[in-house]
Image 1 (spheres, rainbow, N blue to C red):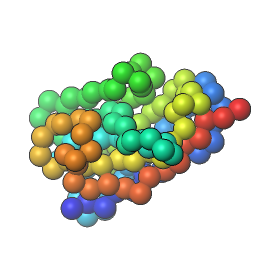
Image 2: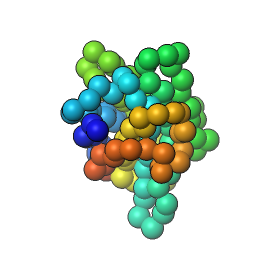
Image 3: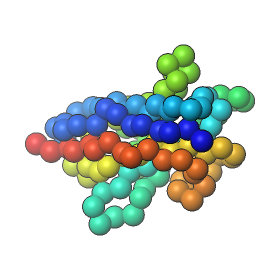
Amino acid sequence: QPQLVESGGGLVQPGGSLTLSCAASGATLAYYTIGWFRQAPGKKREGLSCISSSTSDERTDYADSVKGRFTIFRDNTKKLVYLQMNSLKVEDTALYYCADQVEGFVCYDPLQYDSWGRGTQVTVSS
């Protein structure tokens, strides 16, 4: 199983942008469905977006809460999956995780994912 590491979090003002990265050691991310989740204090883990493996026609999906603002994409040459986040809101503040799914494309159920990173903190505040 790959070991996933997220990076790119930080403090940003409302309306700003951040791009998160998900890297893996021990495996090639191109073979997995990759999902991005977030969890704010006192709230359930929320699925945001996922991208299917690169072994067939690539698919992406987005939760309503981030559709039109966030974009998920891969750079297989760099073995990274990104989450570009624009028009950030205070309510986007959370710990953001990436996770991999060996089989299937079940985007928003955390139980369908096999490995998780430790997260990167995103804080949106003026």
